[in-house]
Image (cartoon, rainbow, N blue to C red; front, side, top):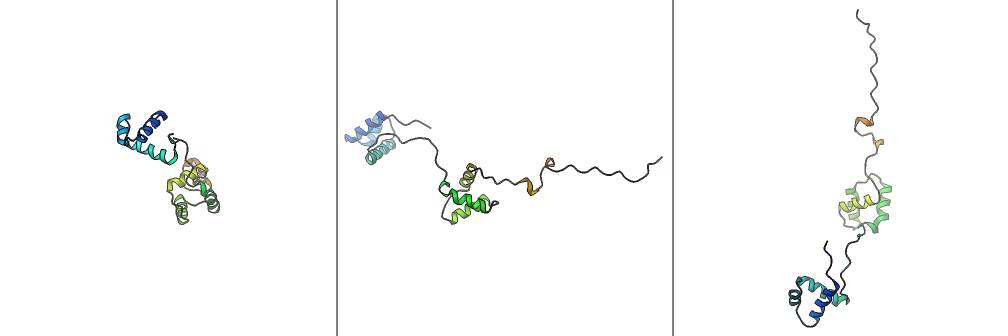
Length: 142
């Protein structure tokens, strides 16, 4: 991600517009895009600040405000799928993507993996070894 323009350049561009030049003329003069100068002016007029907006950081999870409901629902019905949980949230008026639900559950260390106790078909390593065949009662031939 690119760094923001310097405060000095922003101040000069804003001062030029405030002195009566158009945003296009100021953009040409300082080698900037017109949209940058327009946005700087909008921000300056709204807040009086010439500082760049903060960059980076982490956004909170979209389901963070609904954490208690989601975890209670999973406690009530542990085999609830992500799609079903997404549908329940949608019914409550919370529009969210399936990926956002999955990402939130991953963050909360909730897993939907099947448990070994379910005895599903799997690799041979999980099963007990087969019993050896018993010796047949036939007599040996001479």
